[in-house]
Image (cartoon, rainbow, N blue to C red; front, side, top):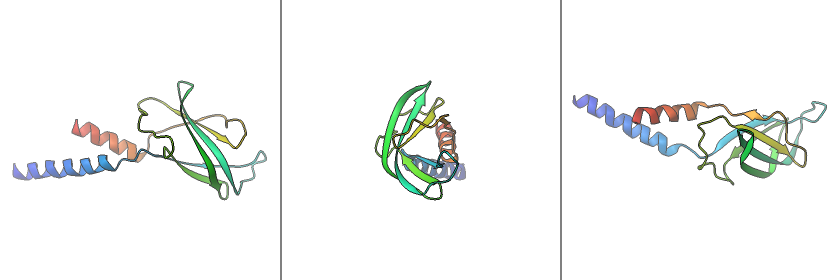
Length: 126
């Protein structure tokens, strides 16, 4: 019985630690090419929007995104917080580069290992 209690306390402590570390940021990496398919090496402004049921529900602009060999990486939520978003329904990510029109089609968001693990911990603790 005592070892079971110790195990429960340990799992709770680890779970609480995991929950406390969950960031309110969304990492996104993409590939950027010109209209002929040539990858770009540049710095450009980008605007990211989250859409739910076709309507924009969140927007964040990044004035200076570095693109190297066509690859860019951003952390979303640093300027416009994501902490009020309930990711319990499908969302699509819209991306606008510079003054161009939004890239089509939009990118559907999928669960990642971190968020899936977080959901499992919440389920276990509830």
